[in-house]
Length: 204
Image (cartoon, rainbow, N blue to C red; front, side, top):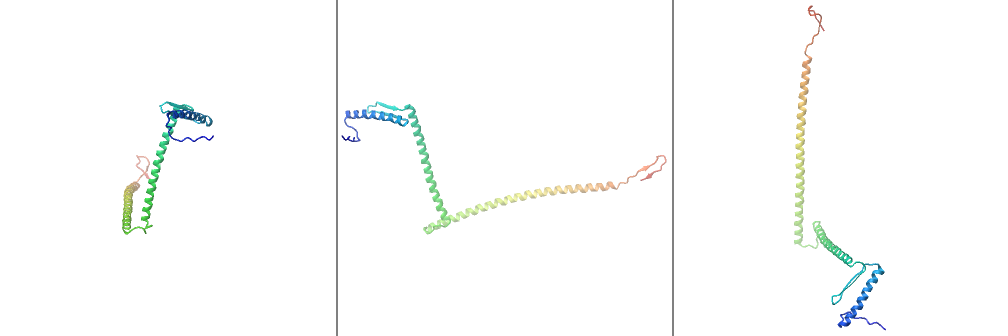
């Protein structure tokens, strides 16, 4: 005898609906138990009847399984949010890169055949503006370098003056010492030999 396929829709007859619920509920609980034993998995099953009666099965602790499920769902939700945020940032960066590449092609004069006269004039103004910015930056760098060189020149000039003054003082002191040595050599020194009362002296 071929088993008739049950149509998946609400059973209108209340008695038949209750009978089907009892049979399938027991079968579902049995399958959940077999799955947990045969495959060594953690299974939790919660069923509320139409009257609000609770039927449950858990291969371990139902509360622990529910906590694990909530943690998993929360982490998955956070991960999905992060992935969505990264995808948005990736799309935004990709768009920016495309705009920068298009701007680069404009500035380098590539692919200008498709632009109108007005668009070319706008590109020309952008190029001129870029040139002015480059020149302004270059002049600023040159000015800063000149200021540094002027400061270095001033510092070297002060150092030179200090060394020149120091050398002049040492030269004057050298000449003064030489002059004193010469005056000391001009003093006559005499040595007298003999008795004082004789009045005789010999000069060496």
